[in-house]
Structures are given as C-alpha cells and as structure tokens.
Length: 461
Image (cartoon, rainbow, N blue to C red; front, side):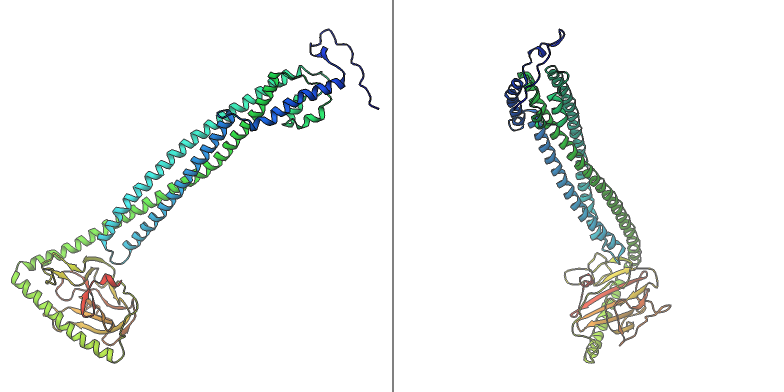
C-alpha cells in the first residue's frame, strides 16, 4: 500500500505566490515529469542543433584555423631545418677545403659567394617564422580573452538561473538547479523527481544557453591548451634555429676570413714570381733561350724516364695499372695551376701561347714533400740536361703509365731522402721544398704524367 504524504501546513502570510500554489506530492511528480521532458530534451539536444555562425561554431572554426596555422608553421620549421642542414654541410666542407692542402681559392670564392646568398635566404625564412609566431601568440591571447569572457558569462548565467529557480522551491528542499550545478548535467536530477518544478520558457532557454556555454567554453579551453603547447614547442624550435643560424654565420665569417688570408698569401707569392720573371723578361732573347733550354731539358729527361720505367716494369717492380687516387704532396699556396696562363715565361702548348704543365705550390724552405701515392722511385737528383743552375727532381712511377714529378726540391741542406729503385708508400717524405733550378722562391713544381702526357694533377686527387 502506498503511503500518502502528509498535508502541508497553510502558507504563511509572507510566503511567495509560488509557495501558495503547491499541490500534493503525487500531483507534483506528474507536473515535474511533464515539465522535465522539454528541459532535458532541450539540454541534450542543444549540442547537436547548433546554428551556423553561433558561438560554438565560431569556437570550433577558430580551433581549426589555429590548428591549420600551427601545421603550416611546423612545415616551415621543417623546411628551415633542412635548409640549415644543407648549409651547415656546405660550410663545413668549405672550411675543410680551406684547411686542406692547396685549396682551389677561385672555386672556394665562388662557393662562399653562393653560401652568402643561401644564408640570406635562411635568415629571411627565419624572420618570417618569428613574425608568424608572434601573430600566433596574438591570436592565442585573443582566444584566451574569449575563454575568460565566456567563463565569466557562464558564471553570471548560472547565478541568474539559480536565482530564478530557487524562488520556485521550498526553502527546505534540495534545488534541482543546485543538483545540476554541482553535477554538471541533468543526470542526477532523475533522483529528485519527487519535487515540484515550475519552469517557464525563459528558464528553459537560459538552461539551454548554459549548456551551450559549457560546450563553447570547453572548445575554447581545448584550443587554448593545445595551442599553448604547440606554440611553446614552436618557440623552442625557432630558438634552436636561431642558435644554428648564428653559429653558421660565425663559421661562414671564419671561412671568408681564411679565404682572404690565403688569397693575400698567394698574391704575395705570385707577385714575387712576377717581379723576378719581369726582370728576366727585359732581355727577351735571353728569356726565349732560357725557355727553349728548359723545354729541351724536360724532353730529354722525359725520354730517359721512359727508359727507366720500362726497365723497372720488366723487372716486375712497377704494376701495369695504378689502383687508387693521389694526394697532395705538400701544403702551401697554389701560385699557378695547370693550364693556359698569361705569364710570358711559360712555353707554348697546344692552342695556348703560354702553358703551365703542372701546379706550383709555394711554401717555406724545407717544407716536407711527400709521395702522392705508392710507387717506385725512378729518378732522384739534378736534371742532367738542365743548364746551370740545375733543378733537382724526384720522379715516382705508380704504374707503367702513371708518374708524378717533384721539381725544385732542395739539394744542399736537406737533399732527397729517397733514391732510384726504392719503393715508397703514399705519404712518405721523399724530399724537402727548395729553390734549385730557375726559380724565384721556394716552391714545388708538381706534375702528373699519364700515358706519356702531362695532365692536370687535380684530376687524380
């Protein structure tokens, strides 16, 4: 049997009009259930019935826009990282070339010029990234402000709904609104069906607006949290890019300074050579005779070397082919490269009025000269066909068709350390830099003979 609730006492004279309209609990349950249906359906339907352009749509649109912007900046950071990686590798390779033996200063100068342009491009990309990150920070600040405003608005609407509904309840009953506010949803309200609730259209609309406000606030908060995390990562990555860029700029400046230093040294050595040969060139007849004598002496020595190579090959002391590459025989400044030259003291060759058949490497006296590759020494001493002063030369056969010549080596203080018939390994000291023969200063005249012709030594390095 169901117990009927006790009758309520008559209302006090100061009670509210709503308090005077109370009915028995059975009737209040029916009225509550009837009124609760539109409230609950309106609440739970609100998130799925958003109208385009409302605050929640705007919040989601802002979330997607920020996510797209962050994705774009991540791609830009990745592209900048790749550019800096390539630039770093090029600068390191250039620095190694400058520290290496006999750098090709002309090629390095062109290379550094290209790197300067690439550094400018990297710097422009970095500046654009910093600017966009600042814009992202400003947008995040706007979203945070919107979140704060929506939080304050939600609090005001909660308070308003509480004030409106509390007037509809007995002061000794638990408020449905309090349950809603404490539980965060209307699920807990189902346990309170025994209480009367008289909600007007304005109250239902306000409750639905609160639910939408909660969802909007959640979307805004999610955007703020995710964006802040991403921007912090982007800021750290951008700072790392700046550190890398600063280091590469410093390395590039060092390379430029080293290039200028080597160019000055080369220019001084070349100026000394030019001055000396200019003095010789005043007597054109003497210069022509000297050039002719030098060319004849080289041809005669070459013929002798060919015979020596054949003899060593027949004895099995020289291989038919050379497997490997050559290395620089001495460090220093390259004052003349292989090929056509404008220097009048060089003999003609092919289409060139003046041709240099080797590479001149200027270095201090007695700088060690090392074998460019493993092989058998076929000649070490003065060129017997040279007029006075005779140039001392070391010649190594690396194979039957590949030889290296080392001219102007010292013969007095530090004569060659090897002799004909001796096998040497790559890098072994064979002589010391000197000034024997017709030379204006200490330097090594290095030549590579391949299949009977003198070729560019750089092709074998």
